[in-house]
Structure formats: C-alpha cells, structure tokens
Length: 562
Ligand code: GLC
Ligand code: CA
Image (cartoon, rainbow, N blue to C red; front, side):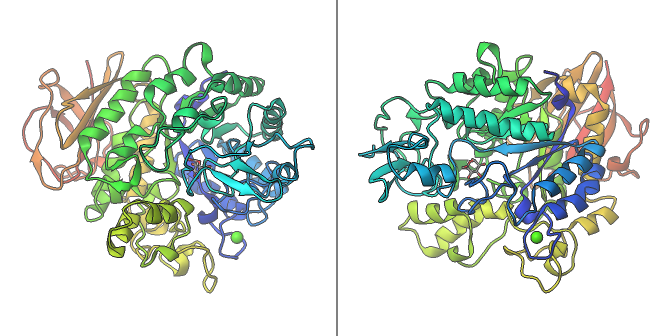
C-alpha cells in the first residue's frame, strides 16, 4: 500500500454543524458541496466524515441504523457520490467513519436479534441471562434488559448502542461488506471508531471496580482476537489504494505499536489520547490545571516511539473534545494562542487533522443549564461524578469539558446564525455568541488571522520534505512554559518554538544551535518592521542567540542549513 497519506493534512467534518445547504437548520451534504473550495483553499488534502449514515442520533451518528445509506437530514447516496466526485476532482481524498463496535438499537439486525434465539441474527449481539459488573462509558451499567428477548445485551457506550458480537464470523463478514460498499463507491479509507474494543475476553469476566465508567475495560480493550479481526479487515483494504486510521479510548503507545508495526500491522495510524489529558484525568470532566510538561511528555513519547516504525496522527481537536484555545491556549490571547497551538502540532512528524472551526479558533460554549446540552456523555458525567458539588460547580465542569463545545454550528460569517443556516431558521444547536468576532469571512479578509496562519503552516509543511519526514528532537523538555522541537533531514533544520506563558519570558536557544544563522520563516508577532508570518524567503535572517523575550503565547519557526 502506498503512503500518500503521510504527506497529507485532513479536515474533519462533523456534518450536522458544518453548513446547512437546504435551510432546515441542520448541516448537510449540500452545505459540504458548497464548501469544498474553501477546504481546498485552506490547504488540506482530504476530508474525514464523522458518520453521515442514518441514525436515531442517540450519539449523533455513532449509533448507526443503516451502514449503506446517508441520513436523510444530510442528503442521499446520489448526492454523496456527487460530493465525492467533486472532492476528488479538487484533489481531496475522502475517508468515512467505520463504526462497528456497536450499532443503533434501531438497526434491523438488532430488531431481529432481540426477537429470540432462533433467527439468523440472534448471535449478532452479546446477550446474557445475567449481566457482569461492567460499566458503560456513557450511561450507567453496560447491560440493559430487553423485555422482548428476556435477556440482557451489552452496550459499552449508550443504551441505544448495543455491541456487536465480533466473534460471530457472520458479523465480520458484514463489516467486510460495508467496507467494500464504500470502497467500491470510491472512498479512500476509514477512520475506525473504538476499534480496540471489538474483541471481548471470553466469558466476559467481572472487572475490578476502581473508577466508574471504565470498570471492565481490562477485558475488552485490545482483547484476545483484536489483531486477527483487524487483519481480516485490513485484507479488504489491501485490495484498494486506501488507508485506515484507528481510534480507541485510552490507546497507549505500546498498544498502538502493535497495531501499526510488525506482524500484526492492521492500521496505518492511530489517534493517541495521551496529549489530550494534559488538563484532565481520563476525561475532560475530571479537570486539572493544564500542564505543559504533561503535554510535551505525551507528544515526545509518541514522536520518538513511532519514529522509523509507524506514523503519527496529529490532532488537537475533534468532535469528542472541547476547543483547544479554551483548554491549552487562552481566550484572552485568542489570536496569539490559536496560532501558537497550530504551529505546535502541525510541524510534528505525522499526518495532521484539523477539526471544523479549529482553523478560525472557535472556542467553548457556555450554556446556562445542563438541559441545554445535547451530548449523552456530558449529561451522564454531570450526574455521575462529583454529585455533591453545587450545581454551579458541576456546570462549570461541563463548560470546561463538554463535547458539545466542538459541536456548535460552524461560524461562517458575522450575520444571523453565523451564516450556518439562513436567517429566520432555528439552527439545531446553539450558535456561539462570539461569532461576530470569530468567523471565516472576517478571517479571510484579515491577512493576520488564525485562518491565514493555518494556511501558511499547511503550505510550509507541504513544501518541505524535512517537515514531513525529518527527525524529531525535543529541546528543553523540562521547561514548563516553552515547547521547543527541531526537525531535521539531511542538512535542513527547523526549530519550532512555542511559548505557553501568559507573560513575556526570556528566549533561550539550545547550546548546540547557538550562533547559527537562521531564517525566521514564521511567527505570530511582528518582528522589526516585518510580520514574519508574511515573511518571504531570504528575509528575516538572524543569528540564533539566547537573548530577548518570547511574548505571551509567541511562536517562531526558524530554518537553517548545516
Ligand atoms: C468514539 C467516537 C465518539 C463516540 C464513541 C462511541 O469515541 O469518536 O464520538 O461517541 O466512539 O461510538
Ligand atoms: Ca440542512
């Protein structure tokens, strides 16, 4: 399989909030069709669609009731094919979300399965007379009693997301069929949802209770047949020029290495979770103050750990996490920190993913009541943890942590509904009130905007083999305020300097580099007369010295030849 994906950058679309093309307040494929040029212009090379299939939306698309169709809210198969064709014509690859750990309880397989033990679908799901002690990640215990069948079914996520029985060869056959259906249509690969959970330990033994929500995980994460099943799915992909990226809660470097390298290799990349826990414990709801040291440690662990063996997936945002400026950056230093965060990850080794709205620096939404939130896991967390805390305190945790902050409508312009849907139409979810200041239109007109900065970064990355394939080396790993790393290939070097401090701090360069004549190719503050962010090659050559200051959330990218 070729490795075209290494040179790419992806854009993730969570369609419901992206762009409403038919004026019903819900994002759709008509809207996507209109925005493909925007994505091309941004400089990405591919799109990952979060699920766009028919779904009762208990978990907004991650509960699928028909794997081979499009949700009527979003369009239909014919429209999808037109979007795919146009994307391909623009040179954009398209990957789909493959969600096969579970289906919706409204999927015809489940409707059949619950009828009893003697039908072709009876073993498609995991049924037991007695539940074990596992917790679900989203809603209470992991077992729900079904009156019709008179048994309990397993659901690792919400009640409306029954787990498929992957040990049944017919189920694996169905997965192969689903994959072929989309690959034959021309899609370029899959993002595979909770793919490390699909093989459960035989006998489903009790877990050791220690933290609500994860009790049982030791028996279903990276389970006994996980590589065998994933190898089977890999074989399907091998017949096509496509790629596979896996997602799984709590994926560690050690487990990722097994999926990505060696005899078990069954995926091209895996999303890491380590760097998303620099301000929380396990879930964002268990908030802690942001620690740059934790962030850097996680990044370096994966950069070094996969070097020469696997390939990293780089991201700071997706539909499961609150907005990164509100977490690791600063809403006060909105523009500076938004740009710095872009530079801090877009130049790492790996394939970058940008989540809708991240490129304009969208921030968290803060709603007044838990009832105003939509996300099932936010609601559960609110009622599951810290229940003795005051309402205000728990709501504050929701403000910090809710996945809904990533799911507010995309801010296209300053007009009504942020240009997401027509004036007078009620958008399906709250638009962030900051859209007059933070929107695409405004940032397109402003050469100094976060949006333009993303474009510059993506262009710079694409033009440089060093930034794509070069070695990674972290400098000053113990510095609690600055993330500094070097990329090098042959005689080309880049130094990426990112300050996470709110105040000016002294600028230091590593001894080995001091004195080098380097070009400042990118930055988020003006230096001298020039805005480095707009700097042309040959300008801004400086001697690298430990003098002067880094301003709040300043970032700089230097390049030199050795
Ligand atoms: C993944 C998805 C998340 C979903 C869950 C269950 O973690 O990214 O959105 O809720 O799986 O499908
Ligand atoms: Ca619509």
